[in-house]
Length: 242
Picture (cartoon, rainbow, N blue to C red):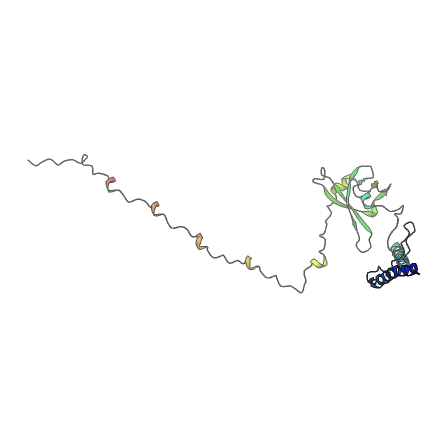
């Protein structure tokens, strides 16, 4: 009986202390608890595909490809794609020598004249005579009278060397001014004169007047001591009267 009471007496303080400690422990602050985090992604796993990126990229690429294909088809109908076997480049023709029927060189083609309305080639300009381009004259041979062979590497004419030297020189015209550079015929009045270009003579600069004569530069007065002495020695002394 005594042991039972002694055991009960020792157990009560321990039980009471544990209960007191449990009651006095601070409650956990919900604000301090970390938010629920998503589970850690596996580094080795492939990233998830964004469904919005797939739905927006593919239609844009399809629209771009369709626009490029339409532009290419439209351009193919408006441009020339390949040079034909019977077509020549102008730089093949310019610089090529033109020969006479007997094989003499008349001159080299320096320019071409074409019809601005029909686009037809009208004439070839050839430099005749001179030496190294100095003193030569320019004559025009009708394009229809020229025979072009071997992709414009050989050009012949029915004009002889003598006829080429005696032919009149071709007269070029001046190129017309662009529409924006032409004067308006309604504006027939002459442009206002530049006030700085008026014909009135500018006022004389008072600072540019001739300086007054230097008083030190005037001729000195005649020195009275420098006057010529009377020539008494040369004058005859009258003889005294008897």
